[in-house]
Length: 310
Image (tube, rainbow, N blue to C red; front, side):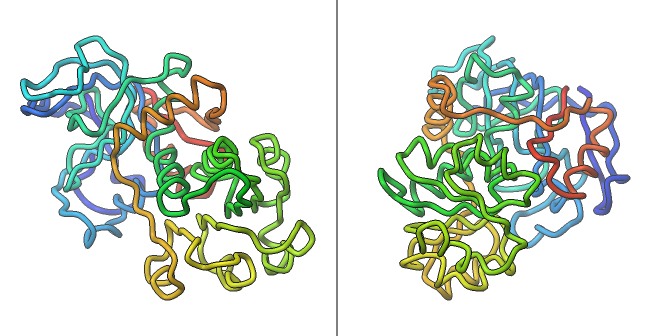
């Protein structure tokens, strides 16, 4: 099979694309013939070597966590009902970093994949799982967002933020987002009632102009955005962050590290089917251009997800 890989840590230039051995089909594995993957910030952080303390790494590494494709084979112990020929999507995270999704064949543990929403292209579908699950788990589990809540989403125009705005709205919440002025219309179009400029001073003060402190905060940016968190939210127990675990421990909030969850993938698919969750793909690259896709991700948010066609 053709796959992207790297055998040393470093910049985008360490990525190469070539032939690698086809992966085996384990007992509880769904082998997916990938049609697309996507690039998330975690991909270049792994490539740079920053997450070696979080997971065992085994070089050479095939990058990527998201996949959309067609089931090629099903292991004998798989009990999910998936069959050869099914179109699936998934967040393929194992307990180590080795066999990622930027490859023609992806061995996915059955817990990591589910049926793809029919209304999404493979590129759109591959852009959802990691970011969508992050937003969904933060909002429904860590923050328990419900009808009538006022929710603040920091970095609402980013990959996770765009999904968070839409999911919070689907849960019955009023959403306030932060974003640069160039992205305010986008965030409003996704369903935010108000959008604040995260570069225009303390967010807690800005909230005073749109109703004051909120019920829950989802932090996707960290740093200065959290400097006045006690002025942003009524109770810091309803703060969740994907950035700073130590800070969340100090304030009594929740650190969120996304996990594969088939039921949550199905919940996201239902939102897509109901027209309550849409995907913005800002750029699409071919597999041979994956270094450019990583480079774009590392330079900053392009206004949507970065898909890689396989």
